[in-house]
Every structure is written in C-alpha cells, then in structure tokens.
Amino acid sequence: MALTPSTMLPLGTPAPDFALPEPLSGETVARDAVRGSAGLLVMFICNHCPYVKHIRDELVRLGNDALARGVGVVAISANDADHYPEDAPERMAEEARRYAYPFRYLHDAGQDVAHAYQAACTPDFYLFDRELKLYYRGRLDGATPGNEAPNDGADLRAALSGMLAGATPPEPQQPSMGCNIKWRPAA
Image (cartoon, rainbow, N blue to C red):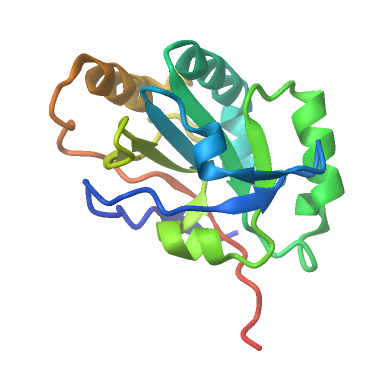
C-alpha cells in the first residue's frame, strides 16, 4: 500500500462522462442516469483498501443523506482486479449487497474513467453542482486508520451543504489520502 493524496482536479472542471457496468445488477450505468437534480458525487473506492474500510459506514450514511437532498451518488472501482482479486466485479457485488450501498458501485476495468477524473487514490471524492461543474474535491473528513479523528464526513458534508445553499466552493480543500489506485501494467 502506498499512501497517496488526491490530485485535486481544478474546481469548475466539467464531470467527465462515463458508462460503466454495475456488477450487482449487470446493467451498464451512465453518468447522467445517476446524477441528481442538485448535483453528483463521484467516489473512487475499492473493496480491499484499509482507508475505504475505515469509512465504509460513513459512505453509506453520506450516500443516503446526499440522495435525499437531490444529489446523485456513484462509487467506482478502477483497481486492476487481475492483480487485486478482492476488487474483482463479483466481489464488488458482494460488497454492495453486504453493506447495503444506497448508490451504484461501478467497475472501471479499462481505467479510462479514473484517468478522466485524474483519480489517484481510494477513497477519492468529486462533488459536482447541478451543472456538473466541480465544486469540491478532496477528503471526506480527517479520520484515517489509526487516528482518533471523528469519522463523520465533516469536510464533504460541509461542502455538500454549501453547494446546496449556493455558497462559493470552500477553500482550502484538503486532499483525500488513501491507497493508490492499482493501475494495470502498461501493455
């Protein structure tokens, strides 16, 4: 595991489009099918990362809260499942079912979507406004495995509330930290 910060995509960047398979349902899910009337939260996660495991319960709470407020939520795993079988599609479906993810959990096998978002780590968060312009990117909160910080989603929740209230994006925005995305070897 290499501790990696998010790349902090520039604010205002349009949400890259995608259409990816959802292992749980077998459906292909497009960006516009998961966006809400008030915006879209895109989360890059995976099954095996200890940083994601540490915040999993808060991801479910946050997902439910954001969806109730009109913000679509989607999670994407882009890890190389050949070398990290815990992140394989069938295991993703098990994870989504076991933890009752209220959001779609999509598989980016080709890693093109992760590259388009400049995702670097798991977890990595991108909050887009109703026009699908990037409003917030960075950490969920200060909690990490081994520290005592509250696992309450404070940073992302504050950004979500600010966005919905029409406030300017918060600054500074702290990068997320977690495991690096497991990129496929170059061909």
